[in-house]
Amino acid sequence: MYRNFFSLFIAMLFCASFAKAQQYTPPCGTVGEMAEELIVRLLQNQATLAENDGVTYRTTQYVPVKFHLVGKNDGTGRLLEHYAFDQICALNEDYAEMDIVFYVKGGFNYIDNSVTYENHANTPFILTANKDNAAINIFCVKDATPTGDGLGTTLGYYSPGNDWIVVRNDEVGKNDATLAHELGHFFSLPHPHNGWDSEPYDVSMHGNPVQAFSPNGPPSERQDGSNGTTAGDYISDTPPDYNFGFGWNDCDYDAGTMDPSGEIVDPDEKLWMGYFLHCNIDEYYFSPIQQQLVLTDLASSQRFYIRPNYTPQHAIISETPALTYPIDGATTDNYNWVNLQWEQVPGAQFYLLEISRIASFAIDPVEVIVYGNSKIITNLQADKTYFWRVTPMNEAYTCAGSSTIGNFKTGSTTVSNQELSSVNQWSVAPNPVKANSSLTINVDASVSFTATINLRDVTGRQVRNIGDQSFNLGQQNREISLSGLSAGVYFISLDSEEGRTTKRIVVTD
Ligand SMILES: [Zn+2]
Image (tube, rainbow, N blue to C red; front, top):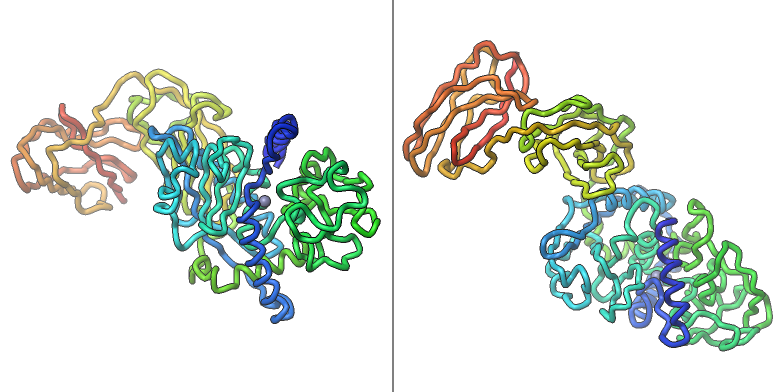
């Protein structure tokens, strides 16, 4: 949240310095018509809540989220995956009181489009085309300004019309409050300062005691609660707020502002839905009625599409994986074929693998989601030191600790990695195969070619070379003796001048 708050603060300074000359730009873009649409939904949910006499049914609800990671045309600039995973972890803490568990549905969607990245409002069709109709959609972009006016100070917004969230890349991560807030909008919650979105309270403009009506129309909410359901955010357990948070520098608003009846107002600075930035990060919350409204919204017919009959993997992962290859400080044989390996840990469905030239992973890290506990990396440079770590995760639990940081140096030799195009398809059988038996490979070639059949162990070291073999157009078999090979994982490849094609085999005792 601090990163968020800091950037919000900078945005505010920017706004403040132009406030006289330009219109105030709120940090959250869910304002104006969007806020009005939200109020319609809020009032529906309030009516439902009143009919049902509150929310009584409580059980853990798993809610699918689709992150759309938008980059430039060449794929650069987009949010690194670990920020989205960190964000899911943080959101699940923020919404834990409501027993809502968000999960990453079906991995991430990658969009490479420079216009969408810089100014998504100019490419609504790209967002529409990518929308997942069975998840909450979150588009992560460089600039989240909803109108495309290029001011660039909007941190994020929820659009009720499009039913999606757009957020700035630098607002997504472990401590960022923006998405907790925008998801609140998704579930029909307005700002506690509803009515003051376009014009924060200013004593010279709005008086003290404050004028009877907010700049956007609703009555100014009163401290005694007498108009709590008909003014401001229409939610009775959130006290009056005339957009005091914008620019206020601590967690206690005490400017002595009075409501229309002359009573000093005391806003709740710790509401996720407000704009106060300087409270303890762990103390932000949703009020009890806000929580009931979120649950009512989630239970509504309009939200049927995010209530799939599906329980994602959600086990809490308490162990961290041990890195097994390359061993720390080792030099690999090749630089363009490095097989990173680690031990599996209970509860992990996949691992986030991070590789970087520096131990902080701060510069040009590579992030890969790996199903299984090894990954062959083919795009490293020769004779360089690399750092790497893996973090175990499952769809709904993305809070686990990472492995230790390993390091290795790449060798200087290369192996051909280009996929062998002479081969339509090929297979090995049986697989797994018993030690000291033989393996049959079947090759379907599109042209005749010559290749060496090689067996390598998991470290990339060659353990057997079957010599040059001629393959003809069409189908053919070769039998390979495995005598003398110990049990374990190996890679069998057809290597020619033109390229290589590899399969993984398991030799059992
Ligand atoms: Zn907002």
